[in-house]
Length: 184
Image (cartoon, rainbow, N blue to C red; front, side, top):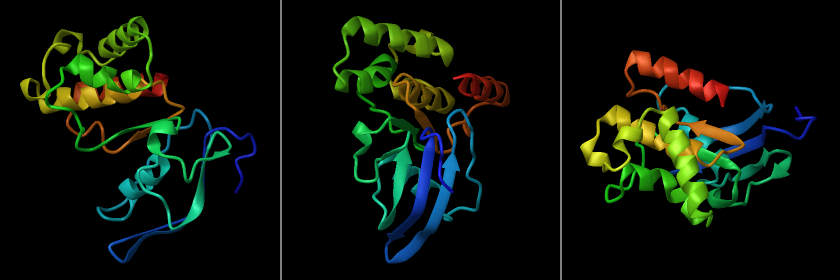
């Protein structure tokens, strides 16, 4: 089950144990560049654990994670060409929407003008430009979710990992954001 073109994602024999319990056992998966894949299953079956291993937040007991043909199993999340939107949003309450979205670009030491352009573009995409100076506590749960999505999208990742990112959006916006993600 090899990803012949070296693009996309490949998981080979992943195994993860948490709290003495096997959560993932011999997981193999290939996702080619441009494909959208959903992990479906009941609560506690390992969906989030799998995403966290792909993103680099968890290291598997055994197996390998390949992104774009490169073994990234032992590489931290900050150096992987991926971005993850967490189910709980993980927003910084003391920062404005703009600063929350800009944060990963500042960490990468991008120029101020490039940061401003990218953040502006992605806030327009998720329809949050009017909240750029608001703090997370001042906006709705659905808007907070869009901030988290914008923070991931602004990085222009090779792989975007979404842990139930659309669950708090109203039906109309969910359809629009899903289409926007698909276009990206």
